[in-house]
Image 1 (cartoon, helix red, strand yellow):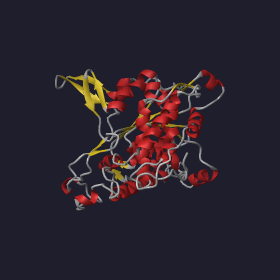
Image 2: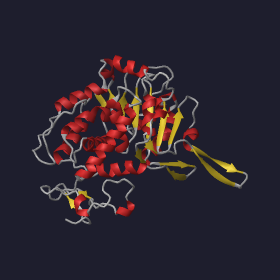
Image 3: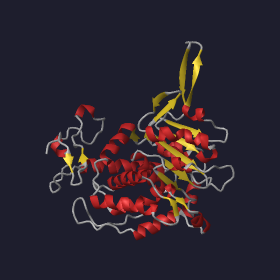
Image 4: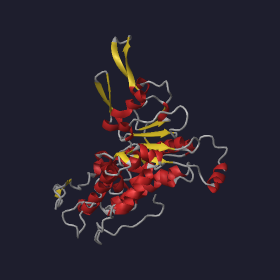
Length: 385
């Protein structure tokens, strides 16, 4: 197989070729500078017809992923799993909703992720009087040049922090719908592209708190993950006191990745193989949310795609070019729970969405895949939720 050919899987899926870019287009420090094309073709000897990311690329992906997580963990102590999930959402090309009580480090974590990447960053503090134009921008008449000019809002950045998003009205919250889905903003009939990569990291306090508004279901569905962050344990709290004189810990970290690195990592993740049995497993999990009597509204097709993309990131972060069932299981709650609309009876009984996802994971059979380079028995990773 040559690098210019497409690959057809048994289910008629077409995989693009794994031809590497020319050395002239490679960023400085790229681990594949000068590597022969045949060495990165991504074609394992015993896997004819399937293109996966080659080991050097996967190793580089794992190194960059670990560097991002460790960089943020130096600021936000004791929150390794939420940080890992946030970085996963970034590399999957999605958005993250961080939820927790005040003072748990939601904003610090979002800012630390942004500062770990050499990309533009803007913060929007959502308040009840915030208007959509305060987020997107506004067209005004420039008297000096006698023409209408568009003034970009803070949403025009690679990483956008929507702090306490549920303190704004539904009208202002919905201003983010188009840009989160299509990566563009339309004002007065004119569309404007936002920078790439683009990610919205929103934080919200629990809805029971005063002055908060629940997010619309359509907007919740556009968040790839809802990440729960809790208060640190005793040892972590004591360790945090050693940094008591550091006013803004997020400002102390330095970027460990460039925007080109993030885009390249996304390309590598797109080459991670998902076996047909695992595809069936992902679909069955989501379909189970639509047939549970305690769930009034199940997860959408967007949830199926989100779970598959996140599973690819998880596999590459562990140094694999293929997805195993535990990649799906470990991310199911963060990807699916916030997309469910529970019945009144379930809410009355105090049943939570995460609990229902746990029960679904227990009831849906895990696929028994064969031993091999692509398919291996399911395993449980340490620290999985």
